[in-house]
Length: 569
Ligand code: PLP
Image 1 (cartoon, rainbow, N blue to C red):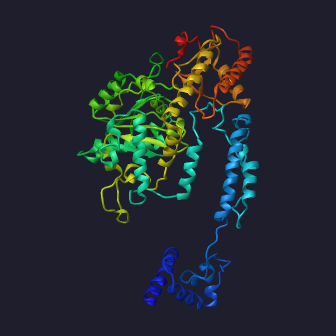
Image 2 (cartoon, rainbow, N blue to C red):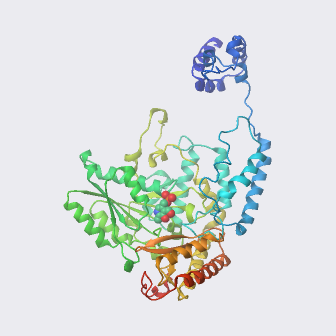
Image 3 (cartoon, rainbow, N blue to C red):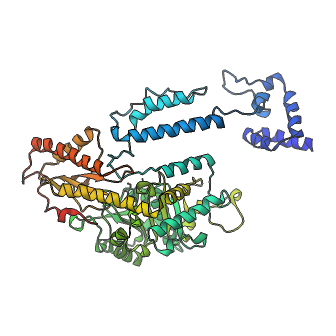
């Protein structure tokens, strides 16, 4: 028996990784015998020497581990040291959060600022925690944009929360990879339950529920909306090509409005859909896509012998939070066989509010898939994109592949068939902590708080004759600009506001006009921060207007009257 075991072991050490795996199961008398065998290896075999010329280990080393290599491995950070460092790290995080309101939101650094501060090669010997922390403070932190600052109004928010951070810590500690039910049952089961919880909170149609994997629909957590759109497009393609000549994939067409996020075009690039239609929207429609525009595009493609395959509507576009009329658009798209996906990356969290749901989220019962990012505005620290499908069949058709080593008995849901990578993190734990530790009521008041703050800001803009709202205020976003000024004046305004470092906004283009965007949604933002932001913007506008002038003949022309103060629930 010992000989048998030893022979198996010797075979394994031909391949060092396998050898390591085998050693783990060898114990007791076998262990002793193995150590004897290692002890009898020649001096050359036991040496750890590496040929200085070829940088190769001696040939004997590849076949025979040394005693040194077999010694128990000691990690530089023990459990007790981790306990101490962990407490310190939590202290550091708390101090960071306390200091956030005083920090410049955006760093004052230039590209390459870190190049000379990081050694060109990694250390050969371990550095201490203290040394690493010192470098974090002195070298890395100066390059951080403080997304959690209460005065971060750029892009869309990326909410962090302590419950999500705690969950992420635990998930890192477990570090399990739940690609299939069998690989970690809790990972799949909790994800199904959390996606159903979230579907219920958002009032999504029953077809999106996992119902314990009974199908046909269900939810899955992706990393980002960009991944969710690729996955939805792959499912659409699989469904469109069913029973067709594979060459027909060259005829597939995808549609979205010209306000859709660039992830739509990227998904088409990735999936290989060459006919991509970016359909025009108009200011007078508040940048929403009209169903007749979609209908005309589809009819023209059908007449040209092409195959309409995918339509993506957006609830809450990145530029202005426009909301496409999902129901009527879905009716047009589905009648010509398109898969309909709805991207609500940022605004989707607002569906927790019945009043927002009634105003902006109608028609979801007619779509094939829907996604939003709880990591944007629902306190579920990056990354967490919730994607639902009404029928997971085409998704699995597109993505299911089970090599022999992953075959398992039973018919449990395997999330590897709902996404591109095999590996997946335990992200549902973040939702579990957030949804339980906040509770639905608190989450609703959190969202309403931000929407109310955005309304306050929009009202301030609307009441200042120098400014105009560039689009109706929706969710937490306000789009605005100085009216009757040349484009450079608004550019200068943004530069002046951001240059001070006390707040951070970005701009967009609406109808070719330079427009500032203020997105309320950072987890720490309160009324005082929005008021301070308005004061700062207003003060900067004084000097910009003085510099550029402001007349009814401004180079950009006067915009039509600010729309009914632009404040919409
Ligand atoms: N869709 C919309 C409407 C967005 O606003 C964004 C990003 O802000 C995206 C998609 C892309 O999101 P992600 O970074 O999750 O891919």
